[in-house]
Length: 443
Image 1: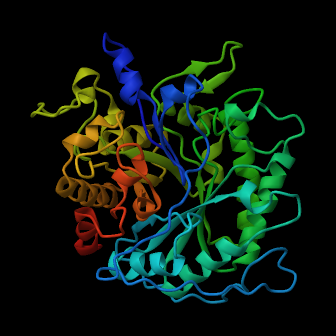
Image 2 (image 1 turned 180 degrees about the vertical axis):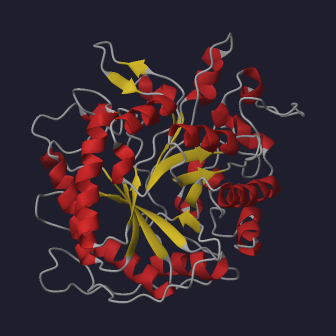
Image 3 (image 1 turned 30 degrees about the vertical axis):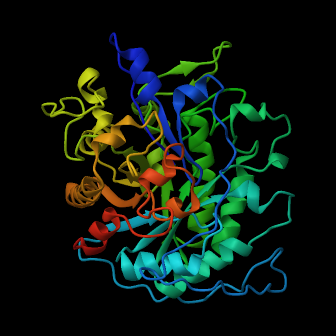
């Protein structure tokens, strides 16, 4: 998924770029500073998942269920469930969602129960890395996804799948791997894969996000560079494949990373495109015709979600000064969503990632200084405010909080930003934000 933002043209630009300008979260992996990425200094490896140690006095664990392999499944997995017992959506129709790291080694039966019964949310976001499921063409490993889908269905949690990362075999002449991950050479291969997902889980897929953060080279690593027009071709192929199978599935255009900056390689290839510019190019290329809503990412700083990042409120002792040193719409959720709404001519957004970081025991990664200004109590308050504003704004169809369970699956909060965004401590005990979401009315 994605993290944030904007270039600032003033004397503090170097500091802002280093600390904030390019913060961007790779869904299911973690948050990295864009500047580190642009300089070739980030590690693309997925962090090692640690065993989940949920406190049994708070959230009792459920032992994993054995998974049977159906004949003709093409890889480990369980026969899909034919009907799910989904609760009715709230009267507002708003999609209250959260992201769970279903491939992180945790107990998916537990997490789906927590999402529905403890938090009272209706949707879960699962990021599916195509490369990991089909490392060899035609040889599918469905096991973990089958388990997660079955448990979501059993617990009545609607599923949004964010499908990313083409396998190596889809590239005849790949770019260097250190530059990032790429779409397939033939976009129909991606369309075929998402079609297989819909076929395998009939009636169980509520929404599909087509790719992620395509305005970054590390997600769209092609010789021609980043191109909204090329992405629209991928989106059209996927949209056609999905809707021909199940017209009720919500197709979400992949969310751009809030960057606020344009960067090119020494050869002139676009490697980072400003998010507002990218969305404008997406609209010009006809992208909205192939999506039921447009994916966006907005991740909190030390400003409340309803602030105007371009005109921040008076500074009140915050140690992180980015919004005041270099005002920009993307420092706050409201001003960012409203900026996108103007570009999208009112077409609804699906905020496929949002969150607020708060230090854990006073610890946070060095580049996440804004986390020091957000207490754990405020983290919960800001998340509730964000859900409420998005629901009432009319601009947002559904929103997915990052994250539920990356804390127990993560590492040291001084180095692992997943932990400071998580609703759970590393030992699985709920943080104050967990309780805030749990008791939040969901009209």
